[in-house]
Image (cartoon, rainbow, N blue to C red):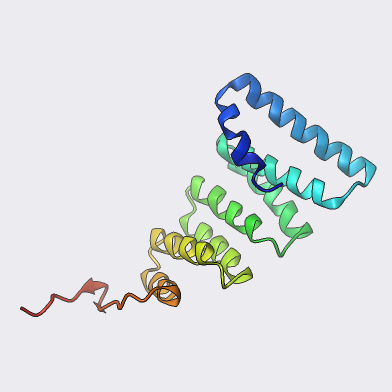
Length: 154
């Protein structure tokens, strides 16, 4: 269940509950791999664990889970947006924008992914690419000259 982490996030404020939730997820993931259960259970456990690791600041572990997910389920936009978040939290804004663009490319009709990709591009200084993406789903006409807004005529 992709939204499980969001639902349980308030419990992560308590350090004891935080550790318990991580242990449960690791246990489910481990038993799922040993027993060859439904692969979606393992995928979402790995996704949960990656989100958990990223939230507590361990981007290396988060990205190791993401790497497994990329190899296992390469068509899931959530994996690439999670990778982007972990890279952003780790300070790699350029890598984060590439990862979020990867998520966007998997579902070009998703306005949220389009917006997020543009936002990550702006963070990494890719202004022209961000404007191009924003233009895909907005009716705003941008008037730019060297990234400066033109002064309106008076």
